Length: 216
Image (cartoon, rainbow, N blue to C red; front, side, top):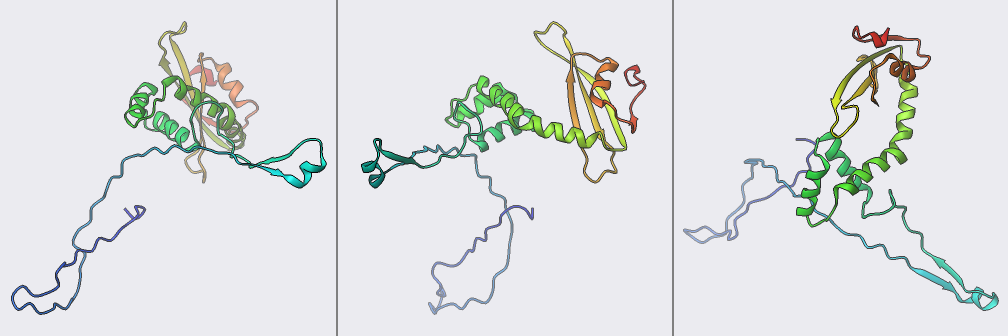
């Protein structure tokens, strides 16, 4: 509750006169009575970026072409579409943290007045991973493989409309006593030991795992 912004609502008399004798009342104190939390529904705001251009009359008179200078525009996080950084980040949070699939998000955004297709949501997820998260993943993997103790496990997922039907997600994470824990997921269609070898490389620490032969 401490992290929620607070607003004090004072309830005072409109007419500060005694209802019996009609003399003016003197305030003698105040006390907190109760608390309540207000929910503010999500809102969308459309930003229309308008670029201004400027001409230097002095330089233009002396050169063969006009001297035009345009104001700089902020870089978009991803090309194509209406996605701002905040909008894209929220769709990724909804999908990967809150487990809301694209088709349900598509309906939710439409109710807010935004026609956002599931294809665009999928595009944002793929491109965000490729442009931004991939480099972070590589850096975290380098740090993870320097830890003296690692844990590993894998599990399968059933894939619809796929030749393999099953696909595997591997997880590699640092020990619970590390000050800054790292957990990385790795996808591979196979469950063979080569997957673990490719991920771990020349790792020479201790690996905690089950008795699955892939780790031996």
